Image (tube, rainbow, N blue to C red):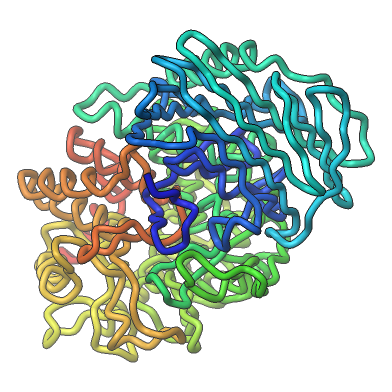
Length: 617
């Protein structure tokens, strides 16, 4: 079996994810941990061979000769089991990170090799490389079966029950495991100036971690047709949720390309405001009220302060500064350069986020999450800032880097923000300037219908300055701006099918024709395909929607994970991985297909009734 670590052979779909609810690691199908930021999601990576090569850090544990490999998660948990077949026997590699609810601030990786059949020759190489694969640690012997790696503020202790051969900065071991035998390896992180934590017992941690995840998954109220897909998506989202802050990152990786060999290689280890409502509805519909409340509370803390300083993205603890830079010593995933850390989009004006936040807070109230007393004043100030900026050109939902335009979707979300604020003011009898907000809401609605819809194009345009379609406009009926059966919405879906469909998958927009400040070329954006599916459901085209859903389920890798994008020509997953928004949309679309009042209907209903009333008048 060819080692996946070879640059030319790697595929994003070859990876699975494990995590402890503060960080996450990517494990290849041949038993190599190739990416991990320690101790937190946004820390510097200590394994970075995913976006470089083996010299940038990895932890490989596998048979010397592999004839076949298969893998799965143990039930609805984050415990990964990889079964290796060889000419001499079979072994199972069990990988997980103990949940930090149990271990406090300590973070660890546990790897257990279980002999299943015959006797198998195994190999282990641990090469920690801190600062995104740049710095080699100092290696110290700490007893017969314990090694310590130290590099500046970082320290990690490897404990295993066999002899290891260690060089200047890495450990190796060759051993044989026979049927019925088990070998364990535990790597524990700590800050180098702090005391060493007590060594973990691998088997005890395995039992405790399995119980924790099974208890967590048991809270799910989903009882539909796709339990494995929905529960795996929920577990994946939980793996990208900070247990301390409630923040949900977009993905645990950076630098994975949206086109192989291309330059659209971003850092997604941050929290995007525009994912807020979709995420909230997925959690609430699935019974995870505590997690939804924590996400709502994170949103409130993130945008607290001066409304004019609201950003589209924040750090996992709602940090504001996310400076972007290029990691020039990494060669990139399959030579896709540059590899970027940080994200300059935090400095952009993306006015749609005001509507997104106000909608998320509205949906949380509508689903029974009680509002914080102080949040009412914050929401009023957000609407007042929206009044000031809604008519300005911005960078839009897709974070264009060529300059600002008057994006149709941004205007639609400005309407959403005002609509939800008016609804809240009316329902809770708040002392807000509702007449002024109602008038502005109607003004924005008229403007979008006049300038955002092009009769010659037969659909909604990307921006007032262009005559090109945009996948984001599929959200128009979902957010309730227009009814799903409105003729303009029907025509816009048909336009999407004509202009943005690539072998059954929806592109964000045509990068060959639409300027965005980057070289053309990317995969199909999976969230747009789910939004298209939701439009079909809302139009009563459920049989077509189910076929789209089946096609999207087929895109998942062998352990049920989705990335940000997909290449319909090569069949490869693209972009950062796994992608929270893709999994959130999968959950919501499953409910939309199965329920008369799924997340799309819940989000659109009040707004749609208002839009129909406006049309009638």
